[in-house]
Image (cartoon, rainbow, N blue to C red):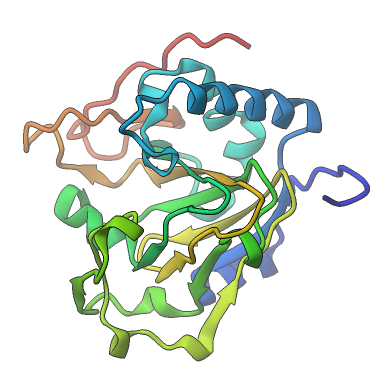
Length: 260
């Protein structure tokens, strides 16, 4: 962890350009230490309360059952940063805790989020903020990206060789990724990075003695049409800032009351 806990809330034009060109961006801390400590304690209890058959990498859409998380998902400092990338009309698409236990944390195979989400969103325009609840290092399986890969949306997939060791069941074929462009996105506690919906990314297993927990917070401009209601899916989206730009196509859930 860095010696001083300084907040980074401003986004420069150079950072926006880097994100657009490379499909990712390493950023600083948006939350105070007190705010992050509260999230750490909350997530710890969520993990304790998991059913025996559910791994801590599988904590998808936890905000549906835990309104407390909107303290972070809808925080004005977060939305101010996100606005610099996608504009003033901001929708919460999803969130996911991926907590890799020490010694046996799962592999996250190389993939693109936009491929897994398929035609649920039109266009596929999502930015993911990855918040380091724990320090995220090479040793405990930090996220890795292939720089510039978001520009290629026609990559091929195959079934993973060992499903029990992987979080997902499919991955990019070896020939469709360039390991020479892989970047390890190491973070201190409380720092974050961003990636685009088609940026190729993954992470190695955690065989270290240190847990690696990250919170993915996913946002899209309010011009993106969500087809879940049309497909009779129950996924909820939330208009957090600005106004709807789909002429009423999207169905937004009310942002719940959440304890501060």
